[in-house]
Length: 470
Image (cartoon, rainbow, N blue to C red; front, side, top):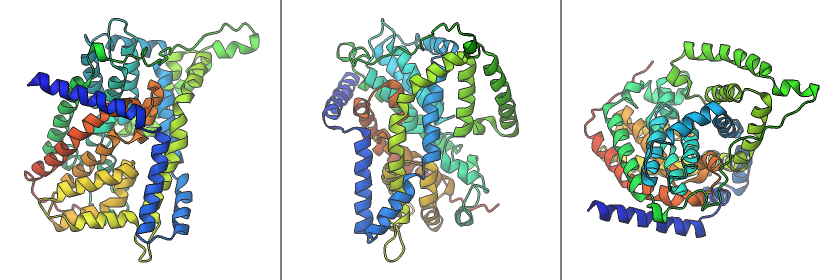
């Protein structure tokens, strides 16, 4: 039976990958088509074309801060990884797996565990681990399957950990919009991500994901290695001896040490004044820490700058595609029909209307997954839909903390096939979305029914939790 299951997963993954390599468009085309679909939906709901165009233009630059943060995630992670100390650490970890399939499962495990602390750490570290594993000459690992495994932290579990934007927003009354605070009150982590049911859900998803990653990975004979895919794995920045006196500072660690010392003062203040696990989930803090470590580990400014130069091409997809999703979000939330309501409002109202106490987790989970396909932003999307969803949870006497978990678990589902969040990882791996989507799609078709069922089944073990006002 296990052999039949393994063969079925492997053949399905290979079939979908073969299809994707031929038919799946570049991630930019995917984003552009999403713009057209959402614009058409808003127009069909009654929004004037002029208003749709204005919303698209207004939203196009709305994700610029986040775009820069994501670009820096790729740059800072790469810079640190190619430094001698970090490269040595990752290389030691890469020696642990004994087969190509176990290497893929190992990457999946590392990615998922790291995602409970920070999705950014998960994405970058797992991606760099894949590259290190791919350099092993004694291991025939499918590079595409390993790349898909590196994505599982963000594609399956990140929102069930400390990175959960919705859980973080709900635990901090200062961050919640007044209208939402008046509906839900404050929900501490103990009622959301640290609920026993939420942790059980995360554990089940993690184990299932690792198993699928292992059994869907091609065996040695069918594996496509990085060499087979013509992927350049050379991460070592070239060093050139410069003898001109004016270039002395480029080769001296003096400026590096001064800048790192100055930054260390801020880091000490940040982590001593906040919960360290919460502080590191802030993208600005994460990037700052990673970049300073990158400077320090590269030691000389010359080497650091060469690493930055080599990392920049990996940010191209982020820089050109994220603005399109900013436009999509504004069309969904700003382009109103004659009654002033937007497409996101109509979608939320539809799913809330057809919900009952028992069906609420499954129905809202499906809605959240659908909207997440077009608005791939955990915190931003929660602000959009939470007023409708949480009010419905109160009316139907559903545990409010579990309603947040429903959102968290379902929100991650479209990530498995949406290229949006893949872009920084793809830049590091030097692959395209179509290279890994066959393997993430196998995860997707298993996760959707499993997650929706668990959200419904575990909801039955919880009693109604009324709002707790600050």
